[in-house]
Amino acid sequence: MAQHDQLHRYLFENHAVRGELVTVSETWQHILENHDYPQPVKKVLGELLVATSLLTATLKFAGSITVQLQGDGPLTLAVINGNNQQQMRGVARTQGDVPEDADLKTLVGNGYLVITITPDEGERYQGVVGLEGDTLAACLEDYFMRSEQLPTRLFILTGEADGKPAAGGMLLQVLPAQNAQREDFDHLATLTATIKAEELLNLPANDVLWRLYHEEEVTIYDPQTVEFTCTCSRERCADALKTLPEEEIASILAEDGEIDMNCDYCGNHYVFNEMDIIELRKNASPADPHIH
Image (cartoon, rainbow, N blue to C red):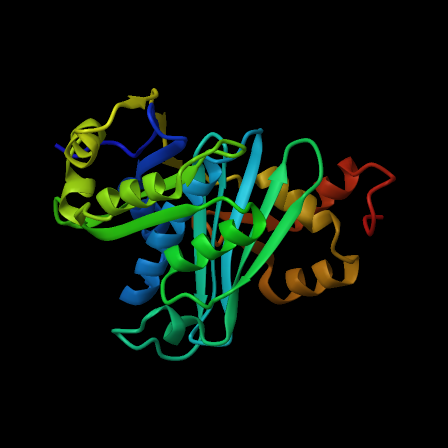
């Protein structure tokens, strides 16, 4: 029986360390279903999805995180966007051939990881990390050490459950401004590192945590559902069209008879014909640029 995607937060009573455990298999399948990505690209999107969910859960405010890989390799862009309600979406772009056994370095080439944190209220923050680690988890651990100075370990696992792509992960982090003992953290990280993909991707979270930490006192909080959600809409597309110069719209209509706007994230199409555009112009407020 497949479980729905969930994020569990937990706390070690005797150590100043917190943890998270997430499974994102269904969400990952949704992200993949409208695209024909090569296997290594699917894997990177799965890993990014796990990472983004774990990172989003570290937010202390309402807002969103975008984690993107950019480079000059065959994978030019892979991006996952998620918010504090664990609503996730993602997309990848490739160029040329993707080797079947490509690792992160081969896929991205000379590249970097960009983490953008956008609170609903307040300043946007962006962190950029070079891809010095061999894995996404190592690069993100590097990011946490630089940006937050908090010892953090990420464990990202992909595989299959019930014959479908499955992904999940765990995060351990020293609590800020608390006197955590480094050896305690290392000990917990060593325990966590023993997690196997088939356990994480198939067993209920409580069983996994019990297997890993049965000698520790762990408090587990109520889980949060993780799901694929796209924020695209006809209204948003209409707003985007309002910013295009009139000549450009006229030339697309002359050539194609309609404007077909496709959402990269979910595959939805929003089609606007000439009548729709006339309506848009009629309803545009005078302050809207380029619409006369």
